[in-house]
Amino acid sequence: MPRSRRIIPKEGALHVMCRGNNKLPVLANETDKKYYFFLLLKLKLDNHVDILHYCIMDNHVHLIVWLREESALPRLMKQANLTYFHYYREKYDYCGHLWQGRYKSILIESDAQALQCGKYIELNPVRANMVKQPEQYQFSSYRYYAFGQPDHLITPNPVFMGLGANPSTQRQTYINFVEEKDSRQLIKKGKSGRPKK
Image 1 (cartoon, rainbow, N blue to C red):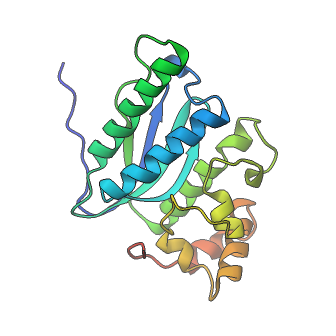
Image 2 (cartoon, one colour):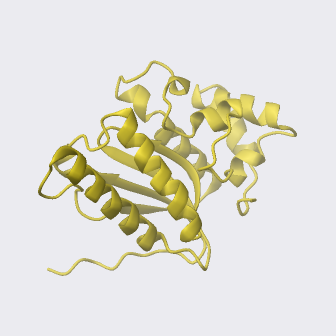
């Protein structure tokens, strides 16, 4: 049976996921995660894709991406996962499928969904009992949004930018949201729009 055609908007946000075959921990150590991170960093520019949120877990990757007309998300994901496959195969003398099929993508249709999805992604390491607090996990966008830690992979989520009059207020409001304090107010405050460079 042929694969169904992927629907990719000309402009908008998508939640993108890819998983190791049979839940294989394909990104199980810091060196492997850093390599995948730097692949994304290089390829997002080449393919005109903005990454708003991310989390690189041991056996899967989550991204929220913003696409525009010139974006080439399928090419980015193919290049990242194929390059990583060659790296992994050589490093670990591995043969067989590394990834569980094609990447999956879900259209993000509202500001509230964009925030909830970012929160879900950044809480992955906590739910997996890898850390107690999201800020303890190095390979996610949480430290950028919660503490302003520089992260060249990220283009700021435009909804986050509307959470307060200044960066300090935006960060505290986001922390409260992730910690489930006053989350209804947060969604009302957020402003939508295109990501700013």
